[in-house]
Length: 556
Image (tube, rainbow, N blue to C red; front, side):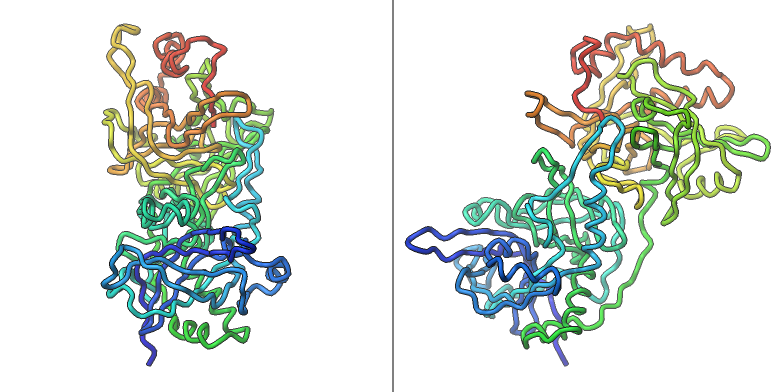
């Protein structure tokens, strides 16, 4: 009987070129996970860093054959640094041998579609591209198995693995351990831990996470709260400007291992690879449908210029029909053609499109708010109410979204929108953060009471999230609408983007007015029109500059 494979600590994987003619060797360090089976030790990691040390004639045939069996190579060495039993230092350097590299072809198909969709237009933006830290994306879907010929390693398994692995889902909390920034900085950055959530899952193969992933983290493990190994880091996403987006690509672990087994079943591999293949056995997954309700009701709004996000805030009934009211940003619906707005609802794996009509837009761009109405049948609306599960009844014929009226700094929140990539085919993307600031309307303005006029969060948001929602993690109440993130502009081509600094229009500004409107007060939104005359609020949204020509640098 073959002893079961166990998972241990993260490790640094370093490829070292052999210096020629007295030149210094080139070092490239990335991350991996140590696996043990009896006295055999392996490292599972990403392949793309190693490709940079391979000869062109060895690389060229790889995309067609989908796997690579290394032969003796005098051009480079591969070693790891990891925890070891009774070691005098925290990390011990051990020589390794590459056994097999392979392509996760089904993951590659999903990845190609996602990255290709990055060139779509967004409301407020005409062009955006998304790439990774690798100049060549050919090997983003490739993984590498190393053999470590040493037995005196860590004593106890650290992570769960394989047969009892549950499915991944949006909002799932995760952690990563990695070795970023290269071999020279292992003493400072080695074994860095980061936490975050799974922001989106595409076809159960590709995960997008918001845990901090830095260059050099490729190949590192993504671990769930109950210490299950659920994925391997492929790459942080980098914007075309060269700046990190704060989001990263991860391949689900079963896709990595299933593709490995496919290669072993279809090709002749060496004894070391075959032994590892047998240790995997048959993994029986316990699939769980578990995603919570944090993304419910967040829709895509399409117009003649692009698309943005919106959130269902009310459903009303009249005779045998129903109307759905969607809150969004003014700049999302501003460039509307004669045919109006197209609304795409997402429920499970089903997408439904309906035509919408803009029923309100704020007078000024800085008070960035609009309402869209969609007429539908009663059956569709009832399914939506059931899916959302956070609507309350304010009359016999009217349901509205629960919203927060009191804001406290530091509370956990989720930002939900269809951002950056063409994710509206897979539902909205969710990122986690805290409510970092609350700015209030001065009490002397309009002789009214103090009221929040801007929220700020640490959630990561990007283009396409405009009009999306910020929900409380505790009770799933609506806190507000995503308006923009912050861009510090130095010159036209030089700026710094802060995706985790963003401005939110508080729900307390518009939800009470919406309730009055739905109950028959047709002029309820005149209050928002009056607010547009407030210089105090205008200064807040113009970052202290009340010049009408001075716009916020970043609109989503």
